[in-house]
Image 1 (tube, rainbow, N blue to C red):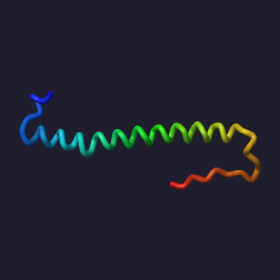
Image 2 (cartoon, rainbow, N blue to C red):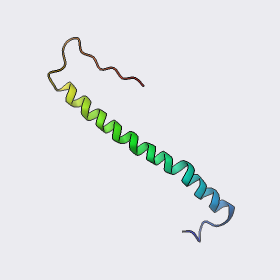
Image 3 (cartoon, rainbow, N blue to C red):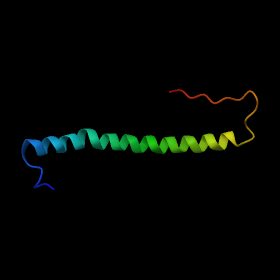
Length: 61
């Protein structure tokens, strides 16, 4: 692969991958894990006896 990415173009691709693509993938993986945890918690909460007629779920985005 190193042989294929030579010169300025290869450096630009490697730079983009290291500076933009990898951080986005890391962020997306963390976001996905948090989202899965939240949806599991919400499902447990909504099926539990904690819900009453005055209960509500507040999401701050």
